[in-house]
Image (cartoon, rainbow, N blue to C red; front, side, top):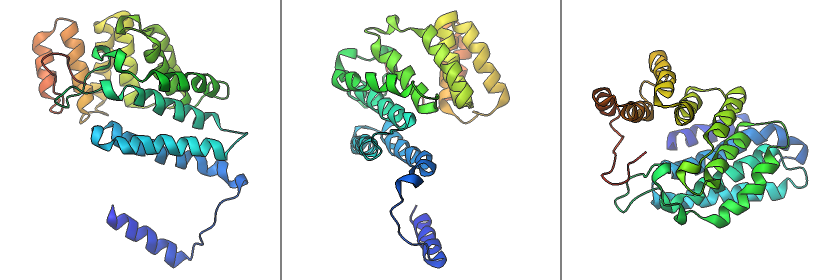
Length: 248
């Protein structure tokens, strides 16, 4: 990272690029890059531990500040991103156990979710879905479905499958396909979800992605395929199920 910063500074110096605060008319073409950076800051916390919660707080602050600066014409994707981060962060205290192991969504203690943030995010989700659909807006809608369910078994998985279908239209990727396969499994059974996951395994786009093998293992376990599940778990070295609540 230090080397990248040095190269960037050198490029700015050699090209004599001036420091200029962009005009409002220039904001739109720069927005996608800014939103990507904010979400990367947020995900640095989400992929780490509570020790980096300051990054999450900062990402949400930046999104709120950007919304204020762009009033009254706030882009729907910015609104969707803020809602998405608020909803994910609302589950922060329930994501890990005392030893720092990740607790899967279905096993989280939902009484520990931050309802204030969920209530703040809910109208933002609706607002973000009023314009042309973008990836952040759809992802925030998926997160909202999870947060609306008082218990894991109350989750509207059919709605989530429809939202993943919409997300595929605006942001198709192997990871989106993997998440959709999980939702399909919750609606139509683990065997159907497994067929979708096996397609991703065959395509090898996610060969080194530990969550692909962890997901496959969990679906195999649910389908009663014990031996296959054990082998899939072995291919996911970062997957560490806890004794009580599971991990993910």
